[in-house]
Length: 209
Image (cartoon, rainbow, N blue to C red; front, side, top):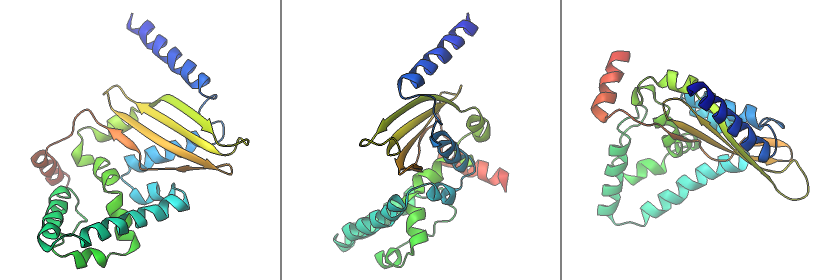
């Protein structure tokens, strides 16, 4: 019975893929999505960044600068509160050096700004945050695909690829195609069914040292 149900699920996925424009990977989007999945598994934010378009790469720096401008408009007390909240939220980040003044953020170079904006990607790709991280990542399979076109040509458009595994986790990659080239349009959206607490994460980190 379970085998029949599994075959039925695979058949439904195949029909979904076919209905949304053919097999994923027809024009290279599946390879780019798989590269994003690999970058996440390896915890390599720089590889994920390289998969983005030049416009989206520049957008990360602009987003940080806009955030910094908002903070600079706050009162001194509000700035201190915002910085304290940032430090607390980045407790998991071994590369993060706590900041106490806004001027320290103003001194960030582009690499540091990009690293901050990709903090979500880096946190969820941290092996200490998720038990059996590598097994979960290796278990991901493509379960959904959709694609749309922009304009009259077939080499401009967007695609979304959804991966799932037996643990109930999901990994979604959104791509954009420009003149035939595929790029990751935003950091992948990953959902793990459970994540370790702060104490559990720090304990796991000690065991790996």
